[in-house]
Length: 191
Image: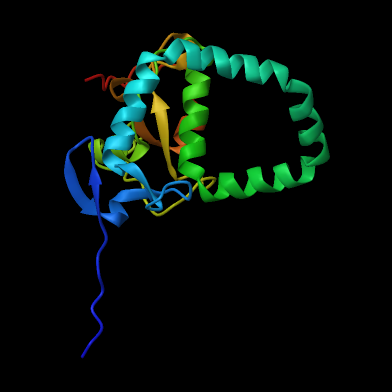
């Protein structure tokens, strides 16, 4: 006789359903070994709490940040090399995230409006054609290759442009570097 695997069912009082144990976070303090609310309900309740207590949470974070400033400074001084190594490894592993964060930071520096989007959306919209020289862009090339895909702001951020889908287009890296922060009369692709 083959051994049967029993599934543990736990009742969630929020959604009033019995679900498998895999739908709950583990909790050693609980008698069942799992939290009383399922993961979905827990996330909803957490988001509601955060939205209703936003100001208190922000104030607590600021207070904690100020009170532990010296400890943080000492820790970073002692672990400077480890942090540098981790930051370098992270930027290589999560290149797209880091790039998007840098672009948003740069846009905020010029007090531009920042819209969240992925570079690939723009590249696909532009059919992988450079909007300055009108030649195909090879999607397999990566930065820093001069013919790699690059995101260009039609109206430069430094001239009051916004970081949005309508103000961005695909160009070769070398075309973008040549253009710098000048507006190009040929580049009239505003949607």
